[in-house]
Amino acid sequence: MPVPGYQDFMLPLLKLAADGEERKITDAIDTLATQFGLTDADRESMLPSGTQTRLYNRVTWALTYLVKSLLLEKSARGKFKIAQRGRDVLQKNLSRIDNAFLNQFDEFRTFTSKKSDPAATVNPTSVEPVIADATLTPLERIEGGYNELREALADELLTRVRAMTPKAFEQLVVDVLVAMGYGGSQLDAAQVVGKSGDNGIDGVIKEDRLGLDMVYVQAKRYAYDVGPAAIREFVGSLGEHKATKGVFITCAGFTSGAIDAASKAHFRIVLIDGDQLAQYMIDNGVGVTNYKTYTVKRLDGDYFGEV
Image 1 (spheres, rainbow, N blue to C red):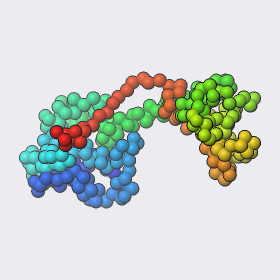
Image 2: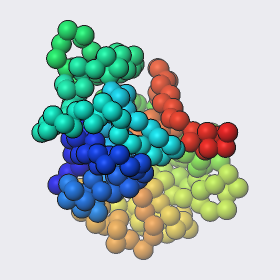
Image 3: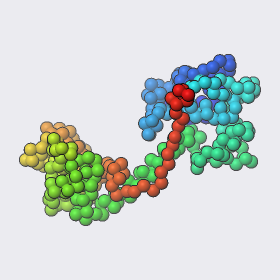
Image 4: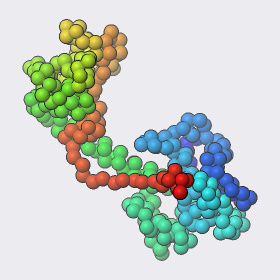
């Protein structure tokens, strides 16, 4: 089963602490994963950022909300235990604890109203905080919003790239390659990339600034997907240019036949379609500019462990 939402972990987490003993957060996560029947894949599923597992993120947010509501308390670094309010709550034999239930506590309402989280706001007269998706933690909602903005930007970039003149597209490819560390410099890359006259460019560029190895590059500003014939022609050009590595760039896509032809080639060939080109542009700051920056910080446990 997929990893449950963070609110699903609240009551089981509180019950784990019912005996009053101090518990490690890591042990609690492992116990809950077993209780919910999560597979190894579920346990290892990562957030889009790759910074932590989805399981860890959701259980620790459930813990945070229970602590802020004074049902649990942090007893030591990486440990927690039940608070008196938590004992009182367990006496009610509830079937579920969620944000709607926690909203009865002043401490929880104060905490959620302080958060700079546009997806979670609290109306003191309402039953529960208004949350866009109750299964997602604040960090997951931030990452989800970021990914949506990134995809929208990528679509906009591709629209602009496909409308470029051949000369502008040539410069774009040079800019992206140099930004990624290929070609040596703008001057070096621009000199070796030649015009083919068919809305495409090709040339042999440095794989690194020292020119220890060379890469043959071909880019096509096509409105249709590249087929296997173009890949086979590209492979032949590699031999002519005495290159053993090639990069084929298009602002469209590649047919399955083209992908198969590239995989069977005797040379190492990397295919970059329009979607990937847009992602490289975003990652390397080509054709985009910073609009607003949010820095998400977390507590430095090592610092407090040394004090």
